[in-house]
Image 1 (cartoon, helix red, strand yellow):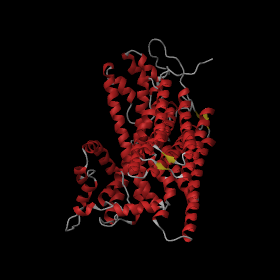
Image 2 (cartoon, helix red, strand yellow):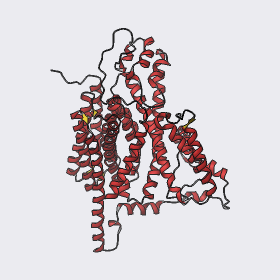
Image 3 (tube, rainbow, N blue to C red):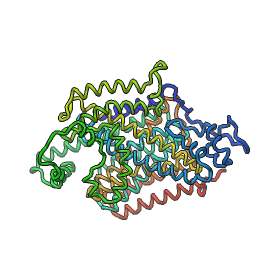
Image 4 (cartoon, rainbow, N blue to C red):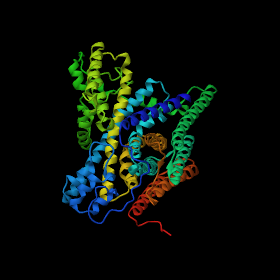
Length: 584
């Protein structure tokens, strides 16, 4: 139990350090809750006027570039590209549709980067860390693996909360993803393969999730998040971790007592993990044996490096369908850069994925990437004493460490300190995700300015869909393969982490920077519709699933899909003013 709390605090403190380092040393911290409410003059653009950036589309085409460059509300505090300036200063007005199309493709590619980084680099390193620390599967599942699965949502929320103007994106994305997962994903699983849900885990997770939604709803109603509230969100998730570990311990203890008084284990009383392990052992076959050469010879250092940097498996390429090959072509540049910058440790392999030349190269490139990514490269170009840049110091130190490691190790056997590469890979992949999430938030804000959409509707649609697409495919795949219970449990366990840690940690970092409580300014009726729909879906599941004896049928799945479609229609009608509250 204490181990679960320690591991949660370790992950959260590491993220806090990572995010706080980015905002230290002169980074401009906007005042929390600053609301821009001045009116834009009828003609001309004042150099000192501060107006809503969405008013730019109401100007003449010749005035838009100057407005974007001089209005503080149009500036981005992070990221590498200024998307608003790109639209209104580098594209003529008649080519605005082309600019939006290019931004849409770039947004899709950023979502691809988020998915590849989280699935192939971030999650494996988290799994390796949990294995190295000898954590139980339950503790690892609700801490490291939950963070790995929700990494895009968490980092998007952290970036959005760093600026009061984009805080609506965080609430829209977290609530929108919650509605999507609890309706579309859960309903799709029930439609694909009707099943009987595990009663106790289901009730535990849904009650905790409803409590988390109530806490966030209370913060929205009060209009602020204090330091005590932010710490309370994180503490509530720690309490959830303790509850999961304690319930699992009690369940295993009861099972052991029942096995002592019963016959030897039969298939009916095997645990889920044992059944999965048996099925995987009986159905698995190492097809790689057919491709191994008869005569083995040691590979040279150059061959190991080339093979380790090759993201394409030619055997898999020949057997996969055309759509997979097309998607793989788009993934290749990202996967190559990730292989070059992010080390991955795999405890399940005999050599633990030790690639001596590449891992030595990582000792130079990974710290350099960390330096050039923090604060969008501001630290990397900083000169020590006005003479020597920081990135040069990092390169020299990394080269010396790589040289010592190269000559002190061998190609065939990993060194004793190889487990440290998992932590280096964790940090590097986290910054990859953070950089991509920053660009995603900036693009969505730019599209909101162009189309005059609120940040909340962008969060509950584009950002929520993009961050949840991986969960949709993975859970549907699990359901098709005959594991609907596992997929259904993932619908509720992961989003509890995303909501509590996303809001709690995002607000905590904002409070630590500005030393002022976070003011929440929800976008009118839309946020309440979003929170109400999420609460309604959870209440329906809490009531209807036990009434069906925890048997989820296709009818139940269709009802959940209908609820999401109704919510989406109501949200869009509210955004465009068709549904509104009458002012008295």
